Length: 173
Image (cartoon, rainbow, N blue to C red; front, side):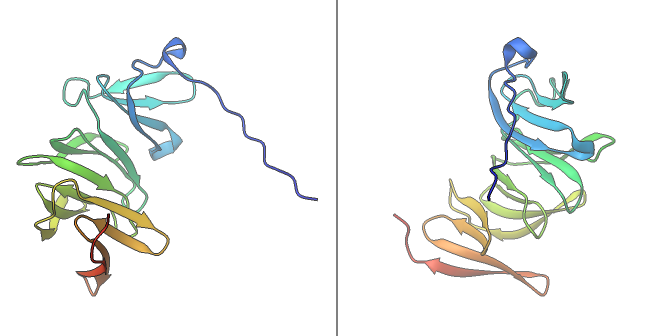
């Protein structure tokens, strides 16, 4: 006899104290709090009962948000800068020349596409992994690897502290 798991869902909206309806991302971060990337209300922390705003003046719009389990830090970007929270303090790590397009948690640590370049976040530093990333490229993590989607599909592999790009498909349409 198989039993289905039962889940309980609670609606959390403006009536329950959510400061904005514009939520771009949600993740569980340090100490088990739920963190939300918002449009206009900054970074929000939810403890199961109430919301607390962070960085409303510095980053009112948070476009993407991840928790990196390797470095144990919360990372987000506002389209121009990359920020982090290590459980104690908030800090801007880096400001892009043009735009931060994506941040992704991976088995190698956090990766970023910004200024048409692929970066790795290591501690408080960004390490350049490769340039000439096409605009609107995306990193995708799957069970079989890490992929970079641009004009062609490439698999990214890390070998002996260097990154290799392998064409997986010549074109994607």
